[in-house]
Image (cartoon, helix red, strand yellow):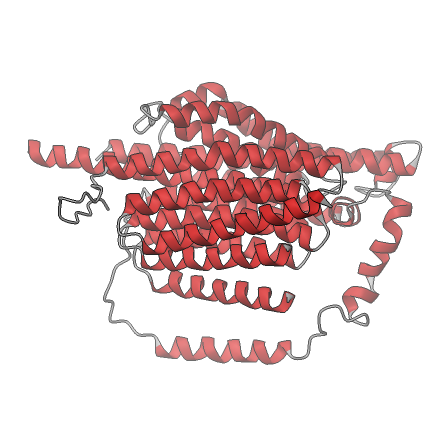
Amino acid sequence: MEATIHMIILSMLLAVAIAIVRIKDLFAVVMLAGIYGLLSATFFVLMDAMDVAFTEAAVGAGISTLLMLTALSMTGRYASTGSSYKPLLALGLVVFTGAMLIFGTTDLPSIGDPQSPVNTHVGYDYLATTPEDIDIPNVVAAVLASYRGFDTFGEVVVIFTAGIGVLALLMRTPLNTSAVASMRDHVVLRVVAKMLIPLILLFGLYVQFHGEYGPGGGFQAGVIFASAFFLYAMLFGLGAARKVINMTLVRLLSALGVLIYGSVGLVSMLNGHNFLDYNALAANPIDGQHYGIILVELGVGITVASVMIIIFFTFSSRSQNEGDSD
Amino acid sequence: MLTHYLSWGLLVLGGFLCVSGAIGLLRFPDFFTRMHAASVTDTLAAGMIMCGLMLQAPSWIVFAKLVMILVFILLTAPTSGHALAKAALHSGMKPLLPDSKHAQGGL
Amino acid sequence: MFTAAAIAVLVAMGLALVRAFAGPTLYDRILAVNVFGTKTVLLIAIAGFLTGRPEFLDIVMVYALMNFIAGIGILRFFEYASAKEATSQNQIKEH
């Protein structure tokens, strides 16, 4: 039963992937990429990986569709057709490498094998020691924020660097506030959006602080928080959105998230322990772990939300500038 | 026991509405008729399936989350259907009338 | 009973995908993607009850939200593209 559903979803993924490669209308490709993202999210749900499914649903199916559409509005809509360049040597090399990789996967342990390294080394240790050391139900949050907190610090810095890169590359002209397509006559959409935006922000806060007890955490909450601002910017125009949230503040906030994360580690060091050792933050080590995880996830959420807002506003204002200068 | 049968009935009815809406999406002749089939049955099927699941909810928080998701779907599915139909109408697509030729404009 | 509803929703998703591949106009494809998104929301909710773990109603909420926002984004893209075409055609007419 489960295997049939898995096979159906995987074959749908394959069909969508083939269609993405073959279709020349880039707009259809972007929508199919959105479908691919949500099929992947469903597959992760069926494989019982909740946090990954959460992030894939938020980022892969929603935000990346929006960002690709904004990029598409700056370039052409149809891919160029009829190229006579046929790279057979490269195709042969890729097929050979793929075959070697598939041959290599026959050596991997099967899913759920109790003797595999995933289940006998640190994976099993984390599952066993999380209730004693950290005492939160969501083991993924425990591993992400506490046991492997340094890796997560690297991820936050990568996201921050992406925001800086977008600003450095695309922020060429001063951001003007002319609103070309502000959808002024969509009264129904505006009313519904005004009702929904506070609830979306509240849901983002719920996901942020509930990440220790269920699926969620800083990354997902940041994306949800940013999506409320995207909705406002799309329906009321970029100028109105910039009055709501100041771009300088957003840039400061994106750095503030990384600063919070690093400061938690530094406070641990100043108390004599290792970097990002949360036991040093309070008298009771378990309380220290809780404080550390909340602060660290808050830093992640702040950085992710502000970087997403930076990227979207920079892309949109750039595409409006291109449109106005025609 | 009554709630069990009621939820079973609602789930089966919701599933049937899903499939019939998708068949309508495939077989209707024109964009606007397809949109009517898709969005009406979509919202109603979502409502029925959610109500069926609500009757089987194991705890109050699951019930509350299902209510919130139902309210969200009821607010947003008709709205995006309306926005799509309005965009199609403004871009020149004409509905299939019995006395006109089959005209499909738009992108 | 949950499996019956799940199979029905999967069949509906497959049919919507056929329409997404074969829609003659673009708006048919957008409609099919919308339907596909709502059906995925229902499928994940039913799958949660099927596997006995209703905690992932949060994922359902997020996906419903992203479906709505991506749909609005697609429509905004269209308005922007048609407004750009209209202004460029006006400029061509003026010259």
